Length: 161
Image (cartoon, rainbow, N blue to C red; front, side):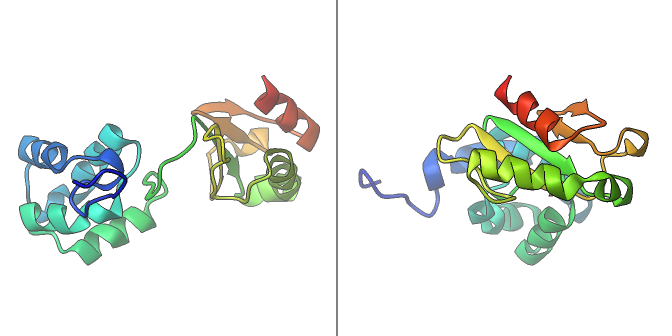
């Protein structure tokens, strides 16, 4: 590979061999799409779309189906995330309790849009449909830890810790 250039088979330092090993460890059938995507995300921190053709060739699962699955389920990410993943619940209870204001405050403080990662790679903000904590609305998680009954000020204090 030419230094400074990214090849198709090894985007951003990822390796084709890692993908091959993941798929070889798992059953490579149509029903294995979700476990395969989960293992790829576990290995890389996200599911690189550049590898859909390779996964498709090894499993027989059409690349379009892999993409559909990866974009349908909120557990999958198609881009690297920051060191701290902030997920703000926007389910009905949280929406009514002020989720939009919390998301807006976080976006302004971190100077990023929802779905983006801060330039320093420290934070990613995601809106999610429901975190299942309606009685604590509004709710967010930071790296999987749940915080409830938030206000924009409380949410900002959390990210500064």
